[in-house]
Image (tube, rainbow, N blue to C red; front, side, top):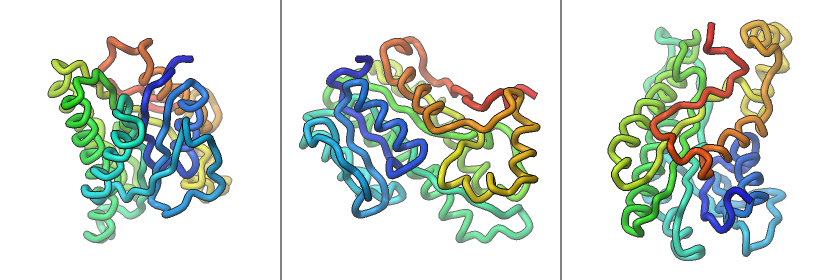
Length: 245
């Protein structure tokens, strides 16, 4: 098992990419706190010795502190923090509202900042050589029309990852990001059902198909494991080749 007895937190774990990551971590021996904004996670069933569910709004710093404290309380530490929680966002520069822009950044960027900082502070205090994985997007690298707030937030995630990796390297704490392309999740099911949009994605993906949550989970497992012990400050693009154009 690649993560035997490691303690991990995965935010945005109610479904999609987060759920796939958390489930895979459990199967690889980790003790996992599944977290999401919902007060109760429908259908969540697992052994309390291996995993629990803790609600958290990642845009609220106090709630993120409480989430990380729960890992210390129950599992006596924290080895892996996966900042996955996020929202989509639409609207271009001419029409996106300040409120929508602010909401997207509060969740997608500030949420990652809170998770990274608080996890790192906890790891430092315990002298844990842990690692932090932030979920970005191909839209943190390339632009897309009518996606101003989302692109901005994900670009920020990648720069935050690089800067934090430099700050934490001497402590032995690794910080990396994963940048998925469009993945089959609840967040994307609406646009993926649009035949024209779906075909656009396929046409722009050299491998010729849309990815699945397990593709991102496998990447997260690699980065969380000792197999990636010499990798920090990197963004792993799991995008079927989208960004090599």
